[in-house]
Image (cartoon, rainbow, N blue to C red; front, top):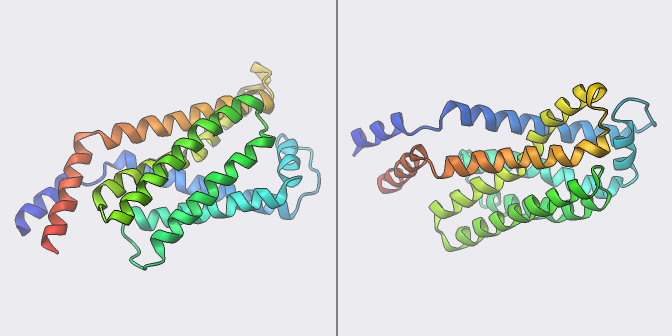
Length: 226
């Protein structure tokens, strides 16, 4: 059994591209939250390209904090949950609670979406899908079905990290705005649709891949060994 486990372990690890993408999204997500908190704390009506956005968030500071702080907690807990780096009884409940708060407050945040109805529609679609995935993960957690829980947890985390993928997409729009003449109000919604769609597509391809099936076999072998 040990030899078989070692063979599966060598051939079924997460692919490097997926791990790199995951950690980049985690770093971006945490950086964005920290930057937003600092902007809220030191809001002074700047004149940079993001000044209008900062002013919008500052005008709804309490709601913004209620959304971004649980989101950062969720991302940090997701690392522990997905990579089995924490076994405390509080970990899973805190993970689901912070995710639910993040998802529900996202609906409220969309009421003052910078990108208007296009951004609002992206939030409605992807935030709803996130909450559905999180609900399924919680359901299988309560049933003790670890394999199904992990699938839906992976899906939920991948969807939420789409907010990180929107950032480089926005960067491209900002960089090309002198030529396209698009304002943030015009391209924010497009960036949301592009960023979240990329993550949803990638995570679904991974969940249905042969490599993922091999990894599931590895987890089954580990469970049998225990």
